[in-house]
Amino acid sequence: MDLEHMLRRKMVISFYELPGIGWHAVEKAVRHQLWRKQAWTQLELLGIGLKQEQAAKAERFFRDASWMEAAGGRSNEDADDISVLTPFDEEYPAVLLEIAQPPWVLYAKGRVELLERPAVAMVGTRVPTAYGRHMASAIAQELSEAGVTVVSGLARGIDSKAHEAAMEGPGGTIAVLPTPIDTCYPAENASLFRRIAERGLLISETPIGTKLHPGQFHQRNRIIAALSRATIVVEGARKSGSLITASHALQMDRELFAVPGQITSPKSDGPNELIRVGKARLLSETPQLFDELPWLLDQASPYAGSSAHDSANLKSEPLEPEERKLIAFLQDQPLSINELHELSAIPFGHLNALLLNLCIKRKIELQPGSIYIAL
Image (cartoon, rainbow, N blue to C red; front, side, top):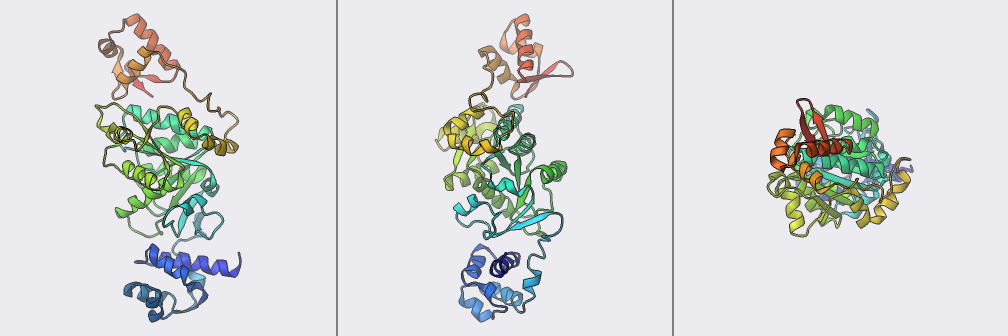
């Protein structure tokens, strides 16, 4: 790293971490090459377009040359295996440079190389149905097995299911945090947080020491969409955070898919509406995504596992109409064989055979108490 690059990088990180300094202020500092001077007067800083309060803070920052040694100090870059990336670093994801106002600083922990892989985002409700949990896990697992990195936001529900399933495959997973890189939110996901740091990648725009506020969730959703060539919405209300991520994806000219759900389920209002108004394409199985975006499979193939199936082989074993009917009954609630008999009117002997076959196909599971659930 040459001296020019090092000074520019340190100036960007330190300037970014100053409270009250936003994206445009950093842009002005970069455009006027503030790193080339050891000190700037407040008048000079006002002259390049900074606001009064920003200029006062920046003048104190540039009062002496100590910033050159202290830059990145709050980020604790050398501790806990935290990497700090700027747009001037090779490791910074090229896909973020395609959007308006790419983050000036990203804090990362884990497998930074995942940032250069083809990625798909998966988002959805924090309180999914059994159907939503099954679809999120199944699609994320198949994407990862094909070498695609799955991006989500570490929230409970759909996000957690996507991370857990993708982490088991060669594609891996990236969790975009609303909090600083050293803080897990929600706290109940602490175990998943640690596993992703070890086997996947955690990233955040938020400097260490920053308190959580609502605006950080908006930033997180924006980065989830920006890192991904396509976004998949799996359950969510019409005004949920997952729909905000979908809106970002559309604004960034990214591909948008939605998994359809029962029209009577409030959890499916969001994806069903996206499909109805033509903003998202209906997604019913993973191979369909590869059929519509063949270039994605080509880009991901170098990272696929030895057991990965090609697009054609990823298709699920076909289901009979009666099997699909039984799965539909189990999507929102677990049911006993007696309850399924009453709902379906299928004779007991045939019903028992159908349920056994669905268990073998890993579409449903028999729980203690002779209760069936959809996977």
